[in-house]
Amino acid sequence: MLFPNKLDTLLDTKKITVPMNHSFTFREYKKANGKTPMVLTLRSKSKKERLSLDIEINIDEWDKAKQRLKPISVENQDINLILDNIESKLTQIKTSYRLSDRILTLEILKKEFLSGMPRIRFTAFYEMMLEEEKVMMEVGSYKRYLSVLKKLKAYNDDITFIEIDQNWIDKFKKYLRGLGNESTTVAGNIAAIKKFLGLAKKSGIRLALNIDEIKVGSTKGNRTSLTTHELKRCIGYFYSDYIPESHRLILGYFLFSCMTGLRISDVQKLTRKNFMDDYVSFVTKKTKTDQSIALNNNARKIIDFEPKLFEIKFADQHINDELKKIMKLLKIQKKVSFHVARHTFATTFLRAGGNVEKLQRLLGHKTISQTMIYAHIVQSDANAEIFLLDKLL
Image 1 (cartoon, rainbow, N blue to C red):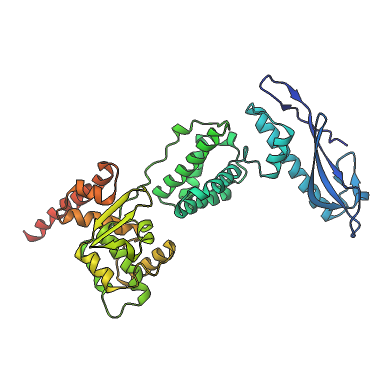
Image 2 (cartoon, rainbow, N blue to C red):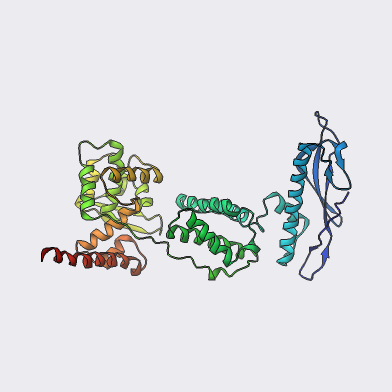
């Protein structure tokens, strides 16, 4: 039995169309509970696909003409709503393929229906590609992309590619700001969306906007760093007798980064074997380059003072959570994560008279422009210091 509503579907680029119909049919048996399992049947010419729906009904209550259950109970009414949603999903798939001039075969229709419509629904495509690329991503990158996906689903899980235009991008930005996300976080989220739209375009999905025109914005943040006084306060707490061991290990890793500029991803990879002759040698996790950094006295002292450093490791999130507690205890009124250590190293290095070009090599930056931001920060600090004269005269 064919459902009376049908939508011709594009078969090839010559605009040849064939009928593609669907109907709700049943298995030829009843289960122990007296109900019959329902099946979605898809037909195109002589081909047929039957998909189990995990729905069981009383066959005597089925209206063949309306292809719905007689609404004589709440259960039947709920099942009818499910059948409405199934038909809506099929229509959405067919319409999207028709409007975007894409070939839709019976096999593709079945795949789209069963897999959440990844070539139609952006969130379904995003989720599918994220899982495919997971093996090639750093754990931190995967978690960031997954966080964006969760926000997308909460905002509009059913958004289709043909609905995503610049107006939608602008509205999603407003939604993110409404969640309390900072401008850098919003920019990072839009960058993730742009990445997966780009993957969709490469796979042949037609988009409603030019992804090159999507303005991401800055994702660099304000590069918070500790002042010399705040850094000394942290060092004093690290060497104190009253610090808990858990704090000493967390703070030890943080201070080691303050003295070397290493990213948390590189610190997490290090073991005691990486330290030889007052140097630490490693392959950077981000740029995959060999790097060897001389250990200054402060870095060497931190390692020697706490022998469990680089033996006991913690998850990134745990480190950042504990750092917040430590900074609160030390009355440092800044939003501190582990990456603040890298910024602190850079600004401290320049304040001590270090050279920008040498700092570039120590930080592993590919371009000097990445490093110059720290020179501007130090210069701004120096400009502010000139007003100290007003307090003396």
